[in-house]
Image (spheres, helix red, strand yellow):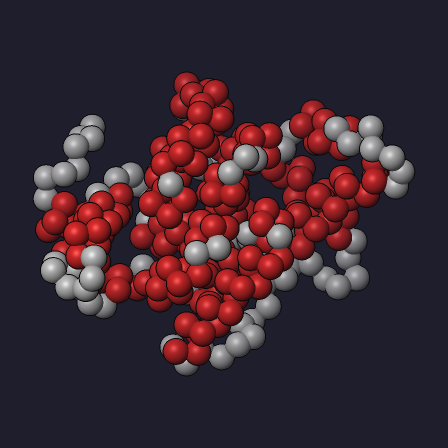
Length: 267
């Protein structure tokens, strides 16, 4: 496999960047042209051309990572480019929404502001069609439990619920309930994106947030079980790495090492 992608990267950047952003990359324009050349050639001449993910999934990984990192000006530009990468408005909205259980509501609400500004630029009327799949009268807890059963084996689910028994009442039961009804049912059960895609984005989001070791391992296991390959998962993290930084990429890969190796050995 070719690992040195330096050769031809200027030409690849010159092709990829205008396709995504509708204007050519920087040569000598602006106040910091040297920095911009380094950044654009690395991201769009190298990172975008390593691995097997589609342009659509690469763009959604970037949107999710930048929402998690709360880099709103860059997020706005990349939401614009996501349309050129093949994403729909619904795809983009769901990638932003998927961050909520991991980052908290404020990050997502502020990302929604710039997202909806881009939608307005493009004449897209909001609110967009609903992506809720559960009926209003259905139990959120049961919906979440069903999704957990799809993601994790029974032993893992039992461990997840027993880990919080040391807490005082009512939190010994409420925290597992919140993880299931809020984290799983409210967001994980939504439509538009497949469960497989949501888990891949969850891994990217957790890596971007950082210091999420046990959860990152848990969602890595689920993402692999749903059919994401080790190569696709590393590709997603590499795609997000220019926005979250190399330490978070390397930290995530280190935490995921055993699971990625086991999945690769079993293929």
